[in-house]
Image (cartoon, rainbow, N blue to C red; front, side, top):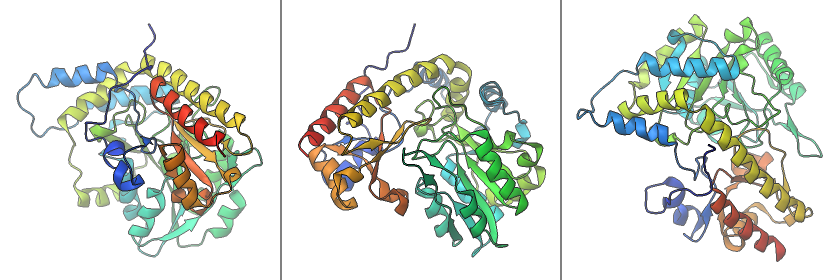
Length: 391
């Protein structure tokens, strides 16, 4: 029996970030928040039931992540993505952003270069600058149809002997690309030639729509394994960000040892007891739920695409291959970034991420999170339709 995503629990009276911060960020509580990349969709029952069962034991103390949790992840990644690795290759982390910061510390020094491919999730460049590294921007190219691709020639032109690390977003947030194997191979070739380590943020790897297929960067070749750190987890896939658990897979022993030095300085410990249980449950029991979820998410995307096609001179949606984040080209509205944001808040009653926050290449764009129930998606479409009809 298919899972039902028509409705979801109300989050307004909880401490949900996207609701709690509405007044601070948008100046009003009268907006539907579609910015933070978690879902307004119930976390799966099998995860919650596993947590409830663990709570039957009356002691919640320090625990190690059980091998069974990471073995469940290993089995999932092997079956879903052909990515095979060992228990010894895995590091616990509470978030991909934290893992990224450790990687920057481990594989570069102050003043050395780290590559990001903009427009991209803002912690990519904030992490680099916050650690006093040189930020090297390798902007993505975009076609007249709104399809993004790597600019390999620009990448080659910006590398110096001081360039140490490339932060890869795959699938890409916010443009929704699922990079093809040959595209990733072009990046790999450049990084191998210049001895550049790759931190691959693959947290959205399970949220890919057919016929697209995610390629784990580390699986490209034996040489790829030697330069790659792979960040993965269940936070996005199963709406479990609040459990604060992910992992970093490092298959090369030298890379692992270098990462471990910086990792130990931070003292990550082993996370939450309940997170371990939830993590294992998601990987063991989540296949059917995820397939139904992706059908639902793509229907939401199609509703948004249909609306954009109704107002082709005002709004264009970037073709999506993965993630649940719509990248909207709003240049047809002829509004500067500040006024564009105000239009969505005041006229559409929607709180989105401003495209400019993903880098200057995002100017004129907005990011909309469509991982919501069908009920909430209808409200989003209605609000946006009304606002566009008055332009």
